[in-house]
Image (spheres, one colour):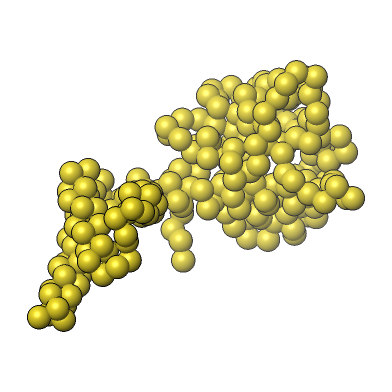
Length: 247
């Protein structure tokens, strides 16, 4: 089971004028499922601690009880350095819309205070409210029925944030000092090309193009010193075997 991810601690999840207590309770539950704990309610139109909401929250009632209530969106964004608004609304000015997977990683960078904003169930965020955000996320859905329930939209974004945070934490925990140097990897590429020519996988007239593709493949992985050493050991064994067969 994944451990709580500290990268999620800086994110405020802001609901503007939520009206449904069941929705708010469901949102608290999915927030806790996905490691988010900071719920901000802007001018809520329901009581977030009424029985219906608490029932839907299940074991996330602490998220509801610790929710911050504020009168307007600017107040909820005080101290926030990056804010993303979710919207399906078109804007009069040219605007770049990101998918949750593309856009939400921005909230996890640099260990700063960030916010993810959702609008009311019946209308979404107004253009004035959208102006409070710096970037915009839109959830793609079936054009025949594109309208998502608020709790569903929050669930999709919370899930993406959880996965993005785990990937980012894994990368930050990676032993960067152990990454193979460019010259060390280059030695492997030279040995790889030589061996592949010997066994007939590469031909001199196509070797350059084929090796470029192999380079791109390995460069995506960011090989460590141990991995390069292992790969070169395999190549040495292949070279030995080819030499034995030719004698």
